[in-house]
Amino acid sequence: MPLARTAATFVSPIVESRRWLKGVQFRDDQPLLNLSQAAPADPPPEGLRRAMAEAVLHQTSAHLYGPVLGNDDLRAALAQQMSRHYAAAVTAAEVAITSGCNQAFAAAIASLCGEGDEVILPTPWYFNHKMWLDMQGVTTLPLPVGDGMLPEVAKAEALITDRTRAIALVTPNNPCGVEYPAALLDGFFDLAKRHGITLIVDETYRDFDSRSGAPHGLFQRDDWRDTLVHLYSFSKAYRLTGHRVGAIAAGEARLFEMEKFLDTVTICPAQLGQIGATWGIENLADWLAGERAEILDRRAAIEEGFAPLAAKGWTLLGTGAYFAYVAHPFEASADALAQKILTEIGILMLPGTMFTPEGAPEGQRQFRVAFANVDRAGIAEMITRLASFDG
Image (cartoon, rainbow, N blue to C red; front, side, top):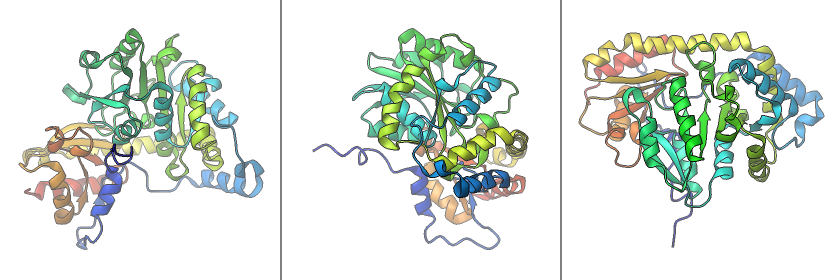
C-alpha cells in the first residue's frame, strides 16, 4: 500500500531541531545561541499593535470573513509599494494576500501542477518548498548551485522535460543568504518563457536586500504576467510571523486559479494580520529601514569576524538577509555534528542535510546560520565558540 502523502515526506527541520533541545542543560556561562530559525522574536512596533488592538475593539469586520484574495486596501497598498520598489506598474488586481508565504507557494503549485508533474528547485533548497511538492505528488528536480551558491541557467535547462511546470527561486536566498543578480533572474525568466513554464520567485527577505533600488527588472517586462509568479511575506518586515500574512503577484488569470485553492483551505486570510500589514505599509517605512540597517550590520559582523573560523578550516559560502551558509572542516557529517555542537558549546544550527537531497555529499559538509535574533555580541560569541569546537 502506498504511503500517505505526509508519511512520504520528511519531518520539518524546525520541528526536529526543537526536539533536540529537550533535556539539554546549558552552562550559565554558555547559554543557548539559537541560530536555527529565521524569524524575528520581538513583537511588532507599538503603533502597529495599537492599530490591531483598536480593530479588535471597534471594527466589526476584523472578526468576519473577508475576500478570498485579501482585503482591497491591503492589496492596493502592496501593489503601490511594489510599483515603487520595482519601478514598475503592478495593480491591485494582480496581487493576492495569503495566510503566510508558505501558503502562497502552495497556492502557486496547486494552480500549476498535477500528479507526477515536476518543479525545479536549486539546492540547497528551502525545505518547506520540498515538503509541499512531496505532499502534492509533484516530483522535485534538484538543481545543485554553482559558484557563489548561485543556480545556473544552462544546468536548469538540461533538467526540463515535458512534465516540468515551474522553476522556483528564492532571493535573497534561504538557506544560503545570497542575493541573485538581476541578470541571473532575467536568464531564468527567458528560460521559463522559452519552455512555456512558470518562474516562481520568492522574495520573502526582499526588505533586507543590501542593494539599493529595484533588485531586478522582472516587473518591468510587458509580458511578466504570462511567466512570473512572485511571492512575498509580511512576517519578517513587520514582525507578523504569528499572524501569517503573505502575498502573491501574478497575472489575473493565474490568481483566478489560485483563488479556488485559497477558498478551500482558509477561505480568507486572517483580518488582524491584514490590518497590521496595511498599517505597516502606510507608517513603518523609516522603522523598516532601521531594521534593514541592523540586519546588514549583523551580516557585516559575520563577514568581518570570520577569520578565526577560516583559520580552523571553516568556509563562508554565502551571507545575506537573515542567513550565513558555512562549510565545516570535520570528517563527521553535519547532521551528526549538529547535536554535538548543541550539547558541547550551546549553539543550535541546522545542518545542510536538511536543505539537500538525501545522501548529497555537499549537505553533509554545510550548516545554515540564522542570525535574525543574534546581535553583534552574539555573533562574536558564536564565532568564538565554533572556533573552540574540535569536532
